[in-house]
Length: 69
Image (cartoon, rainbow, N blue to C red; front, side, top):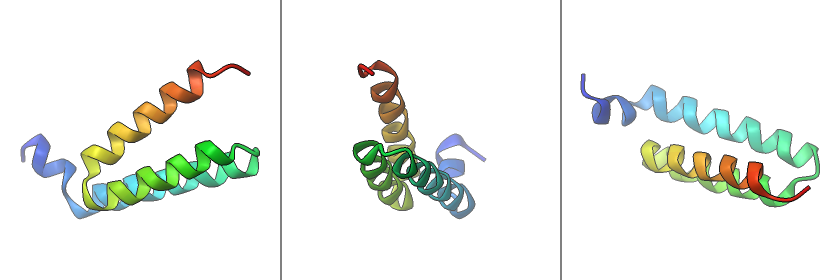
């Protein structure tokens, strides 16, 4: 099974989406509305294209790490 085929499997898409939704819920609970909204957007993208959703999640993590406190 190639990497592209693995990333597009139904189980991986569901797991990726659920993971981002859970992370968005934690962000909303912490009061990070912008981060939560971006994670929901990435989750929506990952339902269709899991590689794009994973890339979006990575960019969100970089943004979260580099922003001032």
